[in-house]
Length: 67
Image 1 (cartoon, rainbow, N blue to C red):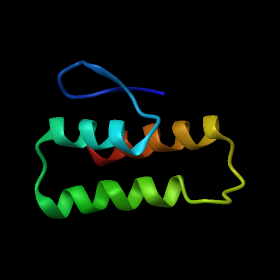
Image 2: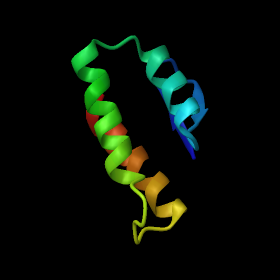
Image 3: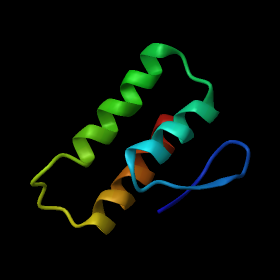
């Protein structure tokens, strides 16, 4: 999935390491970082009925709301 950040840079969010790199580039406060990880964990929880494509689209829409 591609995500466009404040600097107009696209990031591919597929695994936790890449999501961590995305968060690091946002330079967030610690309580904001917890909110991002909570969102990620809720969307990518094991045994979810959502497909990977649905999960990534949901993550993208939620990240846009958080900005």
